[in-house]
Image (cartoon, rainbow, N blue to C red; front, top):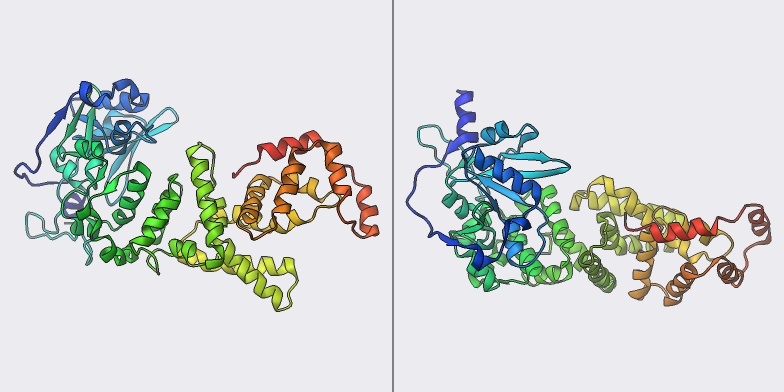
Length: 462
């Protein structure tokens, strides 16, 4: 009985259905995508699946991005072979997933995702055994229903993601006019918008992110239910919501996404991270400048650490607590550490921030007071800190937003570009500290200027 139930959940075939879409075959001379634009590993895996007697296509975002003249981040493959059949073709592969089983095929250092064509989901099986595939809100709980390529196209989220590219023939198969939507710069959800958003509320966020990232206009019928269905996001596991928000913030279009999400009412308790960004008047300029700079870095292919981004988003909550603790009589540094502990404890529950980012966040914050100490060997020691570059960029954002005096940022810019003798002169012009401390400091050797300069250049938002 248990074996029968598991077989129904994980390998149930979709029932036959009448034609649900009209297939258009778009030749290479029209779309312009040659097979040499496909990543070698994805091309090799697709070819091997086809040689084993199955169909296999490059699908989703890779095809969409190539048509838009962008470089795809990943090349995913869809096939009519089951996960077990794909697994039998590739020695270096593994089946993953519970909601929908996939195969990860290892190719050198790369991992390519291979999925089996999906069929229509249903809460009723073909006999007396009932399998619950959705929850009370319509969100899909299980999705291991296999089907045809045509049905798989219907199960995808947006028409621009429902294109299939055959590297062997260099053709695109389009069941839902996704190719025309790309040419018209339109983002349109597949099927009934309300039902599709209920199946997976994360699509509400994905619509906004894709529209901003790809410079597409959300179709009227696709956009209309977003505000009304926003409360469905409260049913999404916090970790998954966090992952989607992180994709949005690291999309290179975070600022426009945040503005759009706010306009559509997806804040005020619905997205805790968005509340953090928007609901702090004193920090609004700081966050706006920071997101703009983050977008510029991503577009220039410069690294951006999620830890750096969270340090930005949460800073003004820390700053507010820090100021309150100091006003109550606590000394500056102990007050800062207390404020940090308080805010991180709260936000771990609200935002599900992985604790692996804590060290980066805390180091960026605790280094901030050290930028104001510009005498003796303190600036040299600060330069050798592994997180110096991230903390330095953070400090410059504080200056640009008006939180700190611009003179501080300009002093550090000059200090970084100066040679060792110039740096010594800059430090000697700063107000002197207590003589006892100064005498003890003289006994210590000065850091190697070349090493300091090298560290200050190499360190980034790691």
